[in-house]
Image 1: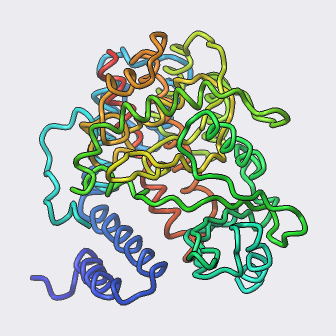
Image 2: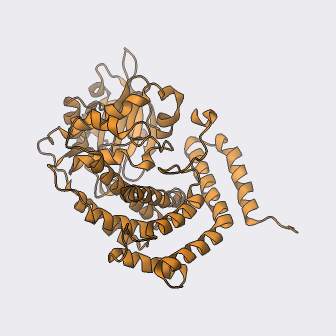
Image 3: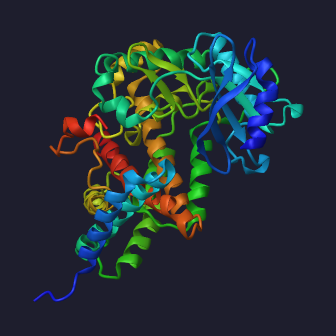
Length: 131
Length: 325
């Protein structure tokens, strides 16, 4: 049973507060309140999705490189291999692995970011268009 | 700000015929490197709206930015060739009391990318913008660099050297950026005759009028000499489409319209796409530098959120690599 607010719930509550006060602030502070809301959004998504995304990244990197390891070590090893030309865009599985890891990161950083090749995705409403 | 208002008031007669003073001075944007103010000169015929751009600390200029005197010379030169620019009113002299500064006419229109690519006010003009941008870029690229102006020259390898060094200096390890660096080096384009480039020609730096399209090309501080495809590619970077990812040119048009407007058969979609990927890489490295720039406290807030935009450049690079495969 949940007897205390989760970190995600606290983040959502602070974000709702910023949403309400932003229109009352001078332009520069209102802008920064929006930036702060944006930052809290990232925090909330990272709390919810971060651990699974990191576990998935670790597993995919291990499969690509052919051995186990910590995610930081595997990532560093892949960077070195790319610098030295041991992998390139034509290497089997490379782009798929990087895309999967990047999409998981993007889902935390900017879930609304639209990019080429994306299937579907929500379209903006006319109300949002007129802001 | 009071000192600034006083200095501008003294200059008023030289900024507009019959100028008696100034009114409505407000700061529009400002960082350590460059501040922008709006104000009007008071005359018997009514206020004359102007823009002041000013570098508060001469040392705070980034390595790639040109002095405001150079910006002024480029605005005048490109404007004389027919590129839409905010007309240069005055390059500040030491006695003006403004420091390093220039004053241009205030052009009406919209610069916010999100509005330009989405708002219904721009529905009619949007389909014409890509060809218009092509024509404007051709005009800029055909402009001989003004006499006595010093501009850096850079090609693809030069840009990759600069941004690879900046990336390494952050200490970050990002596989997609490593892959892009190596891919772009291996596929670097053959050298072309270098031209005058705007250097930051993108949605957000274009003043757009709902009826007439691009009314002025702003922010010339990254101008340099290089491959003209660099300017076209930068305009197509997905980060400047403001959500309209299906309209590759600035979030408002397509490659064919841009190329048609540019009107040079040696300019190709492949050349644009190369520089588009290099543009995403550059923006990715810039975001990383925001992230790792050592900011703390409240000043860190905006920089850290921008730092989280690295992943957008990585998905854009991967999409381009997938298409090229």
